[in-house]
Length: 129
Image 1 (spheres, helix red, strand yellow):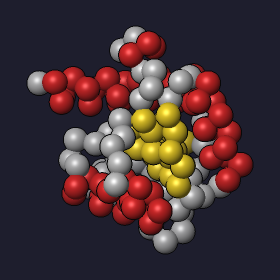
Image 2: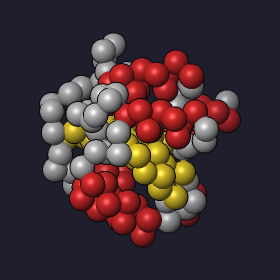
Image 3: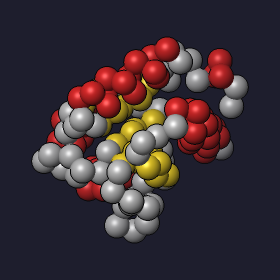
């Protein structure tokens, strides 16, 4: 997917570490993504139910609703929704963690951008089919 096709894509960013969340939001806003922030899993689920997102990014360890549980709830509502987990807890995608991809903290920004583009492109191709 070309970069200009990613401009204006809506992201839901669920991360309880305020500093990391703000850093990610700043970096992604420079890339012309529209970032909606949530500081815990419960808040993120409420935002997801009331919005439409091209990609959901979750941390694993969050208050109220952990990232794997948030992913499971989102996939029940929208099985096609791409979900990227960024965590320092060594998690992997699987039946107990229904995310599409996991990146470990500290995350490399170029690797993150590549992963995001791949997931958004894959979701776009699936919805067009």
